[in-house]
Image 1 (cartoon, rainbow, N blue to C red):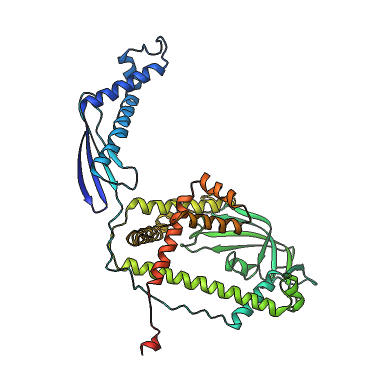
Image 2 (cartoon, helix red, strand yellow):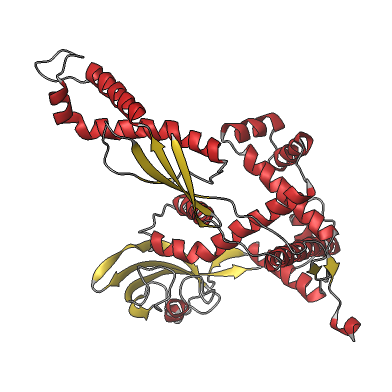
Length: 433
């Protein structure tokens, strides 16, 4: 076997691999012999089919299997010989097989980029300030109160108005054709919440119980559901019922109804403030991490392998598809174009791939590692969070091959903590003055 390496770019190489004619013929004969034993052709016993007949019916298969054998043997050998470490299976380019001649093919691979930092310590980050106002606490308490409101029928008949809950049946049509998935019965909708379509909800205002109405809504070209984007949709709506939300009194009794840990309203306010402070801490931490990543990327330049970007896009698509399935939807029913979505996801996928690469490089430079004890501790934390045994959680992670990804995430976490410890706090504007 002969190998020649051509540098296509800093992250891409093409290996020209030549398999000797003697080996090609040997592989070809092995494939022919094995095929002859298992094929069943009328008039011939297994293993006794003439070569000319075998080639007539199975020529392309013989060629394909011979090439496969040649590549599967020679490609790993070529990698060992050249020291090339690809990120994925190569893109192969080869001519038709000649069993009596050397087989020369090309394998183009992408490699992990070489990342060099000007420096990765002292990245400036914003100081963390956690402030929760009384107004924020009030808003959260009101949200809790709203969530515990009771929907009740109106005491007296009147038209539907903003803030009411409409119980409707509706059908929708586009260009005279009924829209798939655009029909519902006894659909609950809070008028004015803008959870459906603002114009649709506005059309409902003033309707009375039992009333039917037909109207048209024009959707913008950039609407998320491609089945509706840029189209005029005609709706037929029947208002079946009107309900209003009756809110509980905001007092100690209400707080006590939320749990034994609340003796009164002040306890509830204290817990809500703590929760809001925790949320602010998480937001601040996320902001710091983003600053650290941006700081790393600003201190180096490298080309990102397409295979890594593609992997991130596919992972994002898989998560979205799983979410749609849980809602009983398909791409088509949701009005989404997978190819278009991939392109929309591309900038995020690129950033994610770059983040993983730079953090992995810092971990290498600093010799950061994740121990088995740290993995065990994280599994214990996960088990406690879902109230399951750590043995079961470990089995799930092992069965689904999730431990390597868990370990990668823990290493990323450790690397970010290292960068934060060695970061520089930005000065406030008044401090600069």
